[in-house]
Image (tube, rainbow, N blue to C red):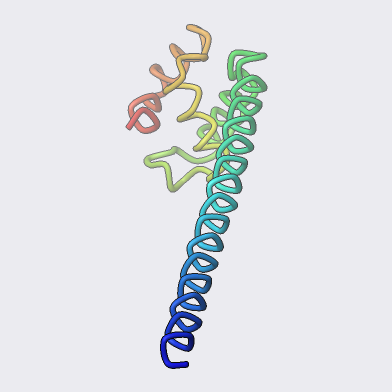
Length: 116
């Protein structure tokens, strides 16, 4: 009887350990899938944002920046709303800004502020 009981306990342990391993593997697979979907969605959103900015060569965002600069001189990124600052930095980093807008920012000494 003792041999039979030991075998039963060993079998139960094997089932529990295998079940835990299977559950861990499934949890990791679900986590990986979720992370991949989030990264894909973020990548698509970023592509869409860049496409919108590129459609007019960042003209609308530069116009908005110049209006702010004419109202009060801009000395740092903190003087500009965060979304505008982010868009201008993206335009510069992705090189989607038309030369005229870039020149306008250089003349106003703003290009250096946003290119860092």
